[in-house]
Length: 288
Image 1 (cartoon, helix red, strand yellow):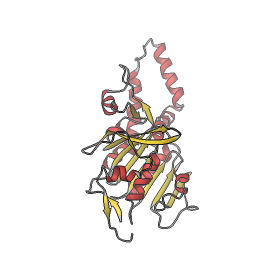
Image 2 (cartoon, one colour; image 1 turned 60 degrees about the vertical axis):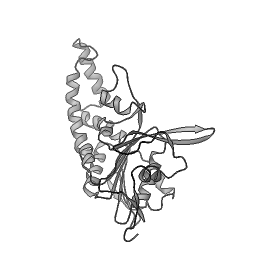
Image 3 (spheres, one colour; image 1 turned 30 degrees about the horizontal axis):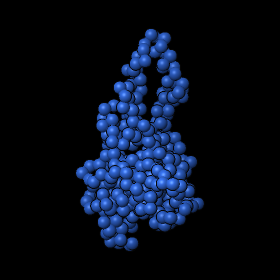
Image 4 (cartoon, helix red, strand yellow; image 1 turned 30 degrees about the vertical axis):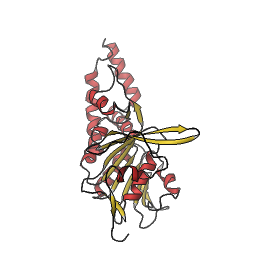
């Protein structure tokens, strides 16, 4: 018996929060419950954490059948018949290749995991500036600001010139990630680090403030990731005495129950979300 969704609409989740708040474990819980025979979890690991996590032996259903690392497929640690394809990614070009592969391979019922999406968003800007201008992003930003100052422009001067660069960066980002993410037929879950929401006059845009006002923190990635996710969950870590506790709060949900700082420290996250909120239920699948 494998947990499966009630209907045909796939999950599209963004999980964000600081390090060590349980995001990776939450994903593993959901994959272990929801991956059945003939279904695959494609994990794009930008944080270099999943190999060690899976080696812990706590998720026997999540054996790796194919692994991509340093630009090539390796089979030293793979298991025939495993349900996980693990892709280790470093830099924008590797991320773009990995995404082209998984979007082309993942079918309905499969899962695509990107852990985390914070790194690629920083890397696409650096990659673009280096390719187009032949310099690293910090140097480019300094040079652009120096030109503004020498031209007598204020703090906001020359913003139009910078928007031209970001328009092209966003087009590359949308092509590789955001557009396929929105239109995916498989389940997709991405993670992001958390960043403080700026509510002052020069802070975040109104749509970002409105989306994350109840939490006070936003995902550290391109702003459309949260807007284009069906579910956005904020994870945090707390302490009760010497014991670490994990909490989850809903920042965004479409037509489902919202979670408010639910303690899932000793609970399978698949039960917390897939069962209690999303309504997934056991289904008998052949060859199980």
